[in-house]
Length: 292
Image (cartoon, rainbow, N blue to C red; front, side, top):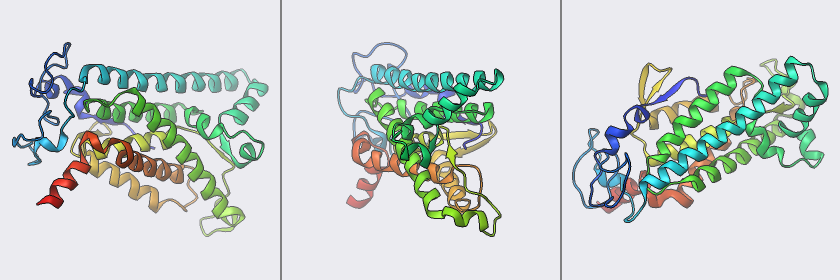
C-alpha cells in the first residue's frame, strides 16, 4: 500500500491556518484562528496561491466552526487507528501464543473471503478493513490514513461524520471489489501466465486509505506530500501514481489487494461528488472553468 508518506500540511498546519481571513472565522478560538493559504471564507477574494490557483477554489461556507470540526475529524481518525491497533494486537497475541482458537476467530471475523460471505458473515466487508497481521502493513496503512485524514480535517466544516462515513464506505467498496476480482479470475488464475494462485482471503485498511486519499485529493489537490519522507509531490500526482500502479498490477498475481485499492478510491471519488463538493476543491475549480 502507501509506503511512508508524510503530509506537508501536517508540519505547517499552524502556519497555513494562520492565513485564513478573520472575516470568515470571526469568534473562533484556539490555535486555528486566522488565515489559510488553501482556504478562505469569502468566494470573492482574488489572492493567488503559489500554484497560481485562486484562494476562492478552496472556500468554506459562512459560519462553519473550523476549530470544532477540525478536532472532531482528527479524533475520528485516531479512533479508527485505535481500533486497527487493537485488532493488530489480537493477531500478534494469537500468533505469539499459538492460540489456534483465536486465530480461527480472527480469520472468520476479521478477514474478507467468499467463504465468510457464503457463511453469512457479511460484516467482514467492514471488519476486514480494521485488521492487520503484519507490522509493516499496519504501520504503512495507519501512517497514510492519518496523513489523508489530516488533509481532509483542514477543510472548514468537514468533521468526524464525513471521516467515519468515508472510512466505512471505502472499506465496503474495497472488500466488494476484492471479492468481485477474485470471482472474475476464478480458477484460471492458478494457470495464468503469471504462475499465480488464487488468494482466498484478504485483510487490511488499504481500501479505506485509498478512499480517504481520493476524497482528500478532490478537496485539496495541490497539497504537498513527502513520499518516503523525501520526495515532494502534489497530492493529485501521488493519487494518480498509485491508481496507475494498481491498474497495471491488477491481474499480475500480486498479493497486494490492488482491486481493493481501486474500489476504495472509486468510493472516495463518488463520496466527494455526492456529499463533499460543497466544501470546494475540484468541484469549485471545474465550475469556475466552465463559467469562463
